[in-house]
Length: 121
Image (cartoon, rainbow, N blue to C red):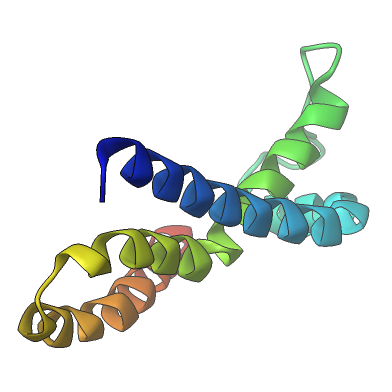
């Protein structure tokens, strides 16, 4: 493959990964308020009695749930992103190397989600 061919392939893989994030974002966007409420409960539980979260920026009441939903869409679409990365790299590997690295795809996704769950405690 030529250098330009590699760039075209990389662009296609990046577009597919971005499209996956966008689709999940569009699905989750109607629930952004509920998601924000659910994920902010641990923070609200540790605040003093009678206090509340304060938005100090004009756009914060809109942007905070949107950013949270975007990050959640990114987290949910990680398997697709890892697969697209693998699909870009795999043609350059030998068959033995492909066979060795296939379990890494599953374990990378599993360990990523385990790390996210551990950090959310």
